[in-house]
Length: 245
Image (cartoon, rainbow, N blue to C red):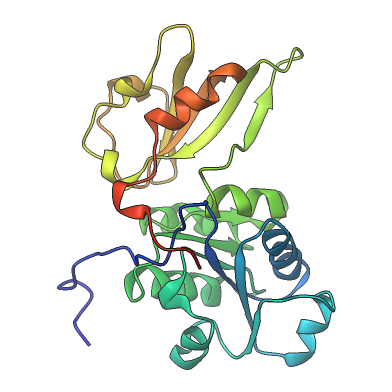
């Protein structure tokens, strides 16, 4: 196998569909993993879920159409059976921090899955993981909707809205192909304002003066009627289009 540091980073053409649906691998079939699998499948996404215990799959509904794989989230055979090579996203949501981070790193560094998220129990580790380029969410703030926000960033996920519902605060991860551009270019007078950026786990208020880096988490205020404008400013990478699942 070609070493990671020599391998060209190429997005799998089957990872993202023209209709926005993706194949997602979920590691861990506990309450969060099973709930996430159900939600994603109900939205039309293809799902494979991995767990060490076969009985864990009892949490899935009887009509679950996804793939269930008995095994470890860092075992090559299990990951291949889950079609990780075709996946656009992976969520590692087992009960072990180290296992989740290992699964996420393998997905990103070996299988070139761009969008990964890992559940953690120890929030003190969050900054370390963020520096590895892996979004993490501590258990105390963990929800299925929050995981979806990281896995499917093209879908609006509102962190806050004013009483009228017209002013929205939205978090977006800077697309890799926009790294190197001034973040101020993402603002539109009277419509979109970049309020802050979290970089390597550290929040900064001088966002508009910064040049974007891969992994930046943007905190953006936008008028509700300008979501299409925001989507145009933060589009998916050109190479993301692919054949349907």
